[in-house]
Image (cartoon, rainbow, N blue to C red):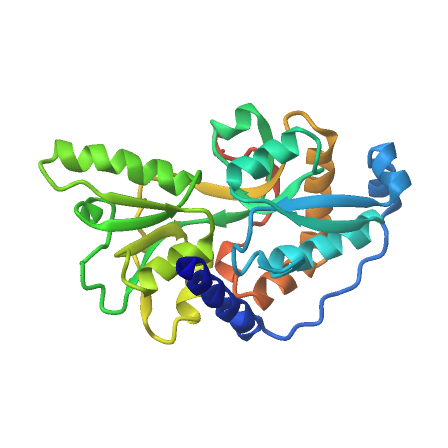
Length: 296
């Protein structure tokens, strides 16, 4: 019970600090695009609303406080709703597996995420990629354990998001460490980002291995206690794209892609990404299942 209380207090502190990272910016209001609205499934168009599911706070994209969500994803879905002529509501579930099953069962229309696009996930879902991401480590200030890459993670306690791509990569690293005659990584899996970063701040973990954008956010809120490391390294990943998730073959995939493209073309996307300090994660053209697509 005490552990849950401490985590709740830490989460509250992070949520209260959230606006500090966002820059004041006037987000352009969108006019409804009749062509895009006409492409919505009839049920959605008639009811006038869609539900986007998330699996808890993923700052600065998704910052969940109670039943409210702020962040870059919230601002973008608000603009998308205006563009499509529907209200987009948000629902929260516990963990990525629950998010994916909720989308695939039809309980939720989509997850705007962004969620990591991987070939294995493309078997059951389509990804409307709207950001490019990198995976790095957040460590204690001064990096006392000298963690700068996957190889240097051996013998250390590494926090990751349960069910995420970073968890898969770090678990594979456990075997590599042993094969190389090194101590294995001690993998600590958490259901959300704030709990993972709290493990590092409280020194229960030596590093948090996750997406660079949210880690940059957490480091900025840590009062100088944390720093990023492993920047510029592959860290077990090739080009990494993240985006919205829809069921495999859903017409919503192409619709969301085209709607995001409108927001990119009219400048709204850049305004929102800059507001939340995500200039280094922008993408010029959104696409479906970009991971695995050959570059020309």
